[in-house]
Length: 158
Image (tube, rainbow, N blue to C red; front, side, top):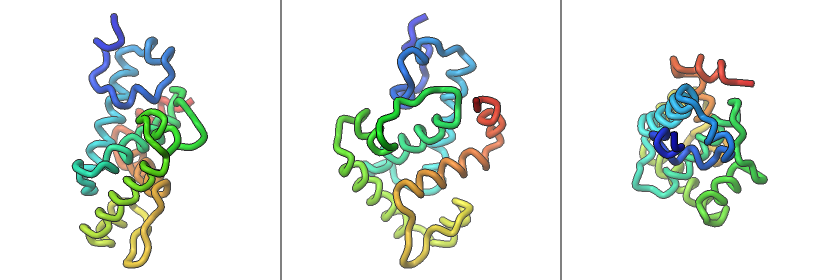
């Protein structure tokens, strides 16, 4: 069966090694699609608008962070942001700036206490907001811990 026929969602697969994508079985595809759906649900629930360019980069950063915990090899460059930049054919600082703006818009549009409660950490305040990578790590941690599907993650860890 062609790999393209098996894949329901495509954006997360570009971060996996090619040999692994070719060898994915139905259970693996279901697991990876679960990562993608959980991430999209989280971003929607927290309130990052899809119209912002940073939305895409935050979403993909969370994918990569969640994939690092699994048996799958992530195409790793120097850093998470460099990996995203390479796959999107853009510069690292463009991604940083877009993500920063999306987080800033989120901070200005929601109550700090509500955001902190949602993330499970005190990271937002009137004068503080998390760095891009802190936000990604907190989001990935929240997705791992809060979903009833998190047992699937734990079963896939090497």
